[in-house]
Length: 364
Image (cartoon, rainbow, N blue to C red; front, side, top):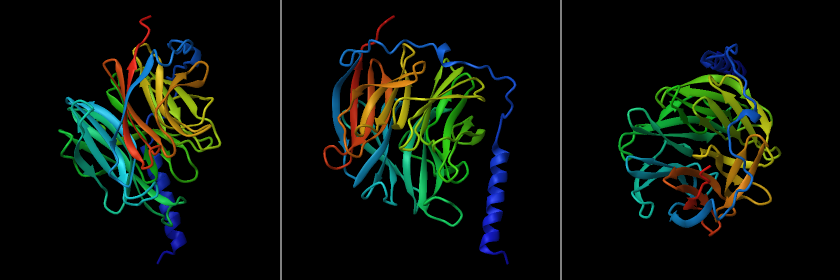
């Protein structure tokens, strides 16, 4: 019979082998470097809060759960959909589930579904539109500590899909355990979805994954970045050939920005001027990049920030009504408005909010 130590050693060897087998596209001879100075963007100078970005409505839309948090939003088949984690009390509840709301007009919201993984805490649901006009949700579930991990929890990423937003598939595990897939973004030129995961144990690092259908994922790059415990990471594509990533790191380190050119095998990383959490990137029609984020200093608040890849800085341009436990916004551009979901506890109970922000962009 194998001892516990021998079992642990076998598990480690098998896990390392499986990770190495999933790494794809490791060749680097065809990389074309792109400097931050070459990025085609409009300057952040002259941004006028209240003129270009004007908060016109802010509404609490859900507070039924004991703790309502970690949101996302999308527009799919004539409906706005919002997803979030609902739990009995707090961040550390072990009964988190995904609540799904939808609305025709962002005024009246219908509770249409909930997703669970039995005996696990489901967190950070993210929405995307997959091929064949299918709505997909990726999220990560956690369960209590095991001797096979060096974290307080075991984490497993999952995906669900639906044709109508109401009837959903069973949860499908994706990636190896303890790799937390954050958000999926589609690249039209490559006809693939891309997303970063972060390893939840020690050592902590980022992997980059791809999928042709939003359901089955392979690892494109392993251990792409590992300084100061990188974790929540979003990316945005410019003309499908250039990618920019925004990375949260541990509380002692500023966020970082990454830049790559197709086929996204080589990345440049630069430190930014702010500590942030829950990044959500959006490319505006004038090629500027904004982020729905939680700024951490001097106090936590949910805001829109403007990303300047050349100056390597985030400029806060609009603070949303928020405070205490808050952040994790979803964000879409619909006509000339930003529609933003987020959570906050500034009105006591941690609740879900919807903000509408009027955009008046320079036509230059």
